[in-house]
Image (tube, helix red, strand yellow):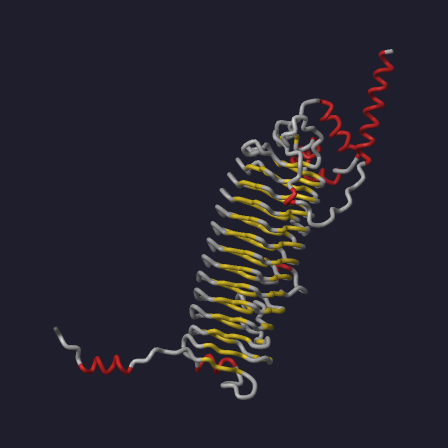
Length: 450
């Protein structure tokens, strides 16, 4: 048996495990008065606690550190570039208020926090009047959670940055953040398998923007009071579940846009009070299950490029129009396994009590089909002419084969009952005038026969 050299034994005996050290910044008895010197002195794995106060400095974390704010210290940047740049992996930044990032004058993504490494955690911070909130580039597995981000509200959207921007950043988690006043509040770009959960977003151009990011999971968020609630493009296998998408009424005015996306599932969402609830374009084989479309000007807009999509168990309640189709229907199914959707406009009956209407429900009326080919016709939606057109189409007895739910549900699902009051519906004087006209015409014909 070979003996171990004495020198090796002595070295092993003298080796000690490296213990992470805790440093303090600010206040009486602290190790340092400012944060940057503490970062320079610390070793990888150390923890730096920063006490309350105002610190006017920009920081670079070039080693794995935990930077923890005690008592909500304010990190006030120089106004040039990003306030905190994280270059080392596995860092944590928690408990700070960050203000005064650069505003992109040098065409850079100036941010409160810019991340260039993987496995970091940005949590429980407040970012006020910043160009970008958090930017992640070419790095995966980062977590951005529980932050409050406020953009430059006094600037037009085109001159603001994004709240949370992830570029080539796979497996990212964006959870429980509150974002407002930004261009795109949450933006996944080339960031597959991202998760956006429990966020509250408002007053932005897009609440959520997803491009070229397959297998994203978007669950339990609120996208409200923006131009577009969620805009999902050029992606596959997206899950959009249990979100509230409401009152998005900007120039685009869409709650949820699905464009050039395939094999995705949209289920259990409340889509309410938008100019257009859903816009579906160039997307195939998607499933829309158990969503509530309520109080939208138009619940769903389907382009002819949207092929082989299926709807089941959804509730269409008190929308001005339930469906506008642009071009011929491309194989949309309005029921799955014999289960259609609930329509507050349905006028049929359920004589056998099986919960399914005995007559099919034509979804798009004559005027909505006209509007699909001529969008400018929308301004006449509540006119007597529109009501007369609808009445004439009904009396013809030849409903369009496009947009028909052959298994309409009679009862609304209690789990998706509206959470707030509906807006007042307009008085349909046009329908009354059309009906009176039809009655008068029928009476005139009968008199002629006498």
